[in-house]
Image (cartoon, rainbow, N blue to C red):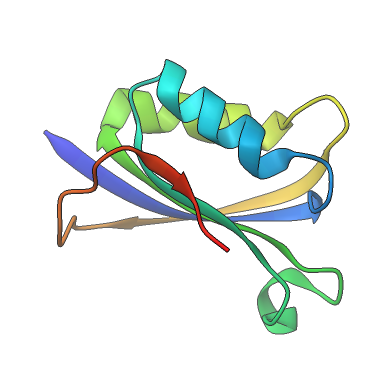
Length: 99
């Protein structure tokens, strides 16, 4: 059954290739959705910003992606991952990096 998770990734995750790395991991794990840097939500991410993503796939694949982003690429320092499970309102195709 198709599931969707909205993810906030906090820590040192901007300017290090986190979005490109996430896109590669999503392709490997058959996850659709998107990822973007967020600079304008200090109440969520703190003053340094963070990364926001939506993952849509089977629950097992989303859980694998969540575990991957908790670690991040080698140069990242992830301090917290906030996960909000949602009903999928639309079918997402592919995985994109949003600006």
